[in-house]
Image (cartoon, rainbow, N blue to C red; front, side, top):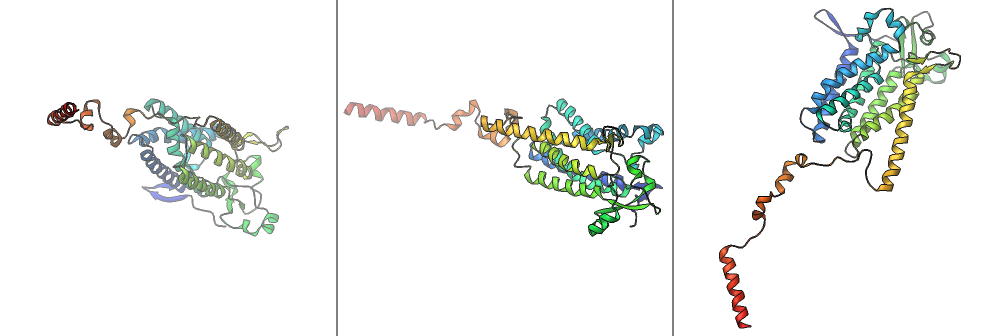
Length: 343
């Protein structure tokens, strides 16, 4: 299997990597989709653009810090490499957590409901992940466990791209989990293409969120849906990864297989989402009203202009009521007096 070239093109003598190109494309598309949701949700113009100026830097920094934190021993040996983002090493959970924190701070400053902003972000985030995962392919990372001869014999399709991917062993850290994936003389071996599995799943999440975004009843439903669906996938796919970040490294006395950070977070997130949705559904059926969160009260300032024009001002009531003229009033009084005399 031919290994991919990590360099997309060279600009002014500087190599531009596919990883960065795909990440940039994913971010741009996510921003455009969020702007469409901004208009649909009747947010002030440019709210999303202003928010992205906060969220994107927070996401990049959070993704890198999360990754470095769980590879700390490696990066302490060469601290300057912490800034080599183009070499890979961005964790999506770090990006999501830090990005949402940035959006929350932004919402407090702008006095906009945070959950409404989060819902604008989620569909584009899922699509950006689907695109960005292909950057892992070019960087030879986010790979899975080895495709063994026995596995290939039982499942012939596992020998072919994109279900399997070629990995060059010298590109990776020398830890216990990766060393098992690097045996052989050629230096290139087949591994499960877990980056591809996640890319496809994130694309499905995007399709679900984009299709149902107008049917969600609460602010924050897109966020909850994304969290549940992504956590469900990551909880299983992370178990197939050969380059996971570990909270507890394999080989510990109590945890021989180790504890993968993303798998633990995914399991906790999935349980939280399920419990939250079940309790909220039961409560809403009992109260026969939407809660957690309640719908926002529409203020006079938020009333659409067309509706405001339809509501007469207090001083304009005379224009909306059919008031008789002076001549009509005199004629009416004369007729009433004549009928009274005849009686």
